[in-house]
Amino acid sequence: MSANRPKVRIAVVGLIFGYSFAEIYKDHPDVEYVGLCDMNVDLLKQRGDELGIERRHASVEEVIASDQYDAIHLLTPIPTHAQLTLDALNAGKHCACAVPMATSLEELSAIVEASRRNERNYMMMETAVYTTYYLHIKQLIEQGEFGHIQFLRGVHYQDMEGWPSYWMGLPPMHYATHAVGPLLAIANTRAKKVHCLGSGFMREELQRPYGNPYPIECAIFQLDKENLAAEVSRSLFHMARSGAETFSVYGEELSFEWLDEPVMYRRREANAYARGTEYTRHSIDPEPDFRHLLPPEIRRYADNGHHGSHPHLAHEFIRSIIEKRQASINAVVSADWTAAGICAHQSAMLGGAVVEIPSFE
Image 1: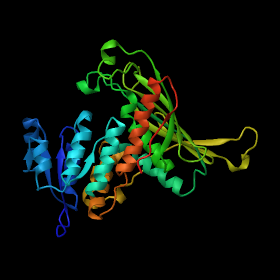
Image 2: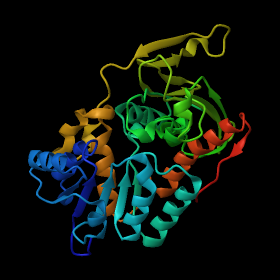
Image 3: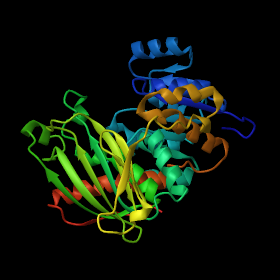
Image 4: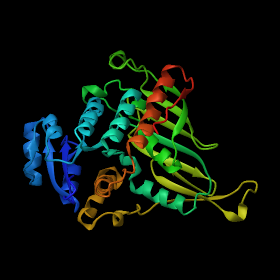
């Protein structure tokens, strides 16, 4: 973005998942124009026609090299994330990217360094930290409703059978940020140590691509905050359970538990610390609404997938560029959240031995 251009020119790369973001950017008041990119030329034409967007590219390399764009939003397969992000940042583009940031600690460090060296924003577009439930709990914590946060738990169950080949046998904790991110964001810290165990049987052909024998992994993280721990469970194969992507926060005065239905538990003051302390339980109905935090032009997109997170993510990325500041999920934060899962899998492969998680500050 040049000094005399007050709006952002952005290209969306990957139009299966990226379509919902392209339409948000198209209507965002701080976006000058949107370009579309996909290797599938038929999909590119279809999405471009549907959105009325004429700037179309069948090559991501063309987009990265182009001077038409200030920013790129990558929604491409996981194995491409790290290199495309580095290419974008090194070409002087701000970069947003779908999760995970990368799949190795070395790649995480390289992205953090490239963001700093090129003075360009990086933002991992973690949908779990802009859901309406996350924003609601964050608000209650800031208001002091929870008291001391005592424990956190994240869950992400998913069945990847039949998905593209790069998913087959993927270590569960390599794609753990949907469960890890909300916990570390709420605690406003990083994870510094992890014990993780692999669990379950995985058929042989799924073990070959990554050398991973585990369909399920369960981790206990020690957070970089006094006396605070978090538990994360992640599954990708061979578990008879419908999908779940949830987090729970247990406080001294109030707790939020999201298994299937999100509920709250509040300690009754009259029974404080008495034997058999009583708690009230209530559901969260209706679902909280935070569309007032968005520009009027994109508020209607708060009804979209991932519990309304997409317009908040897009808005934060664009505003961080306009305001010349780091995004809320910047390169360091993204690396901290992603490294937690990478190190958790390392621990699982070591039979649960403790693994220190590096800091990226």
